[in-house]
Length: 383
Image 1 (tube, rainbow, N blue to C red):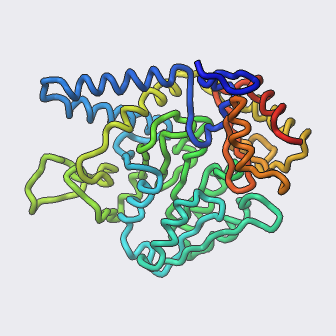
Image 2 (cartoon, one colour; image 1 turned 135 degrees about the horizontal axis):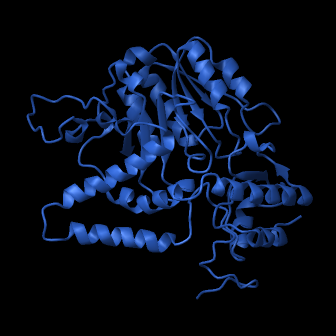
Image 3 (tube, one colour; image 1 turned 45 degrees about the vertical axis):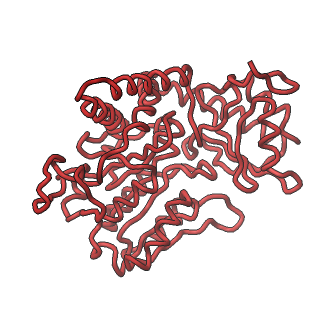
């Protein structure tokens, strides 16, 4: 077994894993994923013509779990390559009349990839992109500033549930109420919160939701997940990129008789990707088998330990202090005299895994993280 220098932490020890905002892990993760992929290989390579039946059933199982996490119907969810691809399919399907000469609202601390997508589409689709800024001297966009910018010309508001830069958590109830008042479409990015924070579409209804099996869902890359509310399909939603799996009956091969599926399957295209969904299923199954609230309770205890340690060492906390205003991550600003990018590999040497974005150090304790791992961080993070 390979050992880290000095403190002799084994490389398969995840007690210092603080990367759940990027990639999630859980006990037995490697073996469970290996077994799932081996089962797929055995089925796919068998002298049997049912391989596609098994493959599509595996994909459907993940959709079913995703729907259950959201409080959605199974017919209302779909898959794509990643979060950006998922959101792009929704935008692509909206009629021009919905967006043209109107405004799309987004916060400056959204996932940058989604802002890149919107800024590139604004001129082509004829909408104005309004980006709500972060106040001077602050770290994240306030909900009240977002609501103030949400005027009557807003056709679509993209809401980030939990910021990937500060772990600031949006007040979904207040934002849903503003959507009702303005009559706007709402899209919600749940990527940094789903699987660790409670969520239910029946309490906070959105028109569209996008996420990924990475992070707290402990899945594999290549698995974007989406949801569209049945009411949002009352108007024509017809993605331009369509294929045989966009139909109610994929086996309709009459090239003169295409029709979109009546539900979220219309966001499918051609032959679907399978392997990322197979590789992500073990993490989803493990997560849903845990006692309700147990992972969050563990996360909160370690988050409090992290905040106290950062305060002792004099770091500026970028995340909200109140538990109900914060996601499951703790972000801190590294002082100018230190190089955050150089701190990351130094901490890795003692089995503490974090990452940085500019001067921001990102830390997310999850089920495999322990107090001992945080103690190693405390010993090695400079004052």
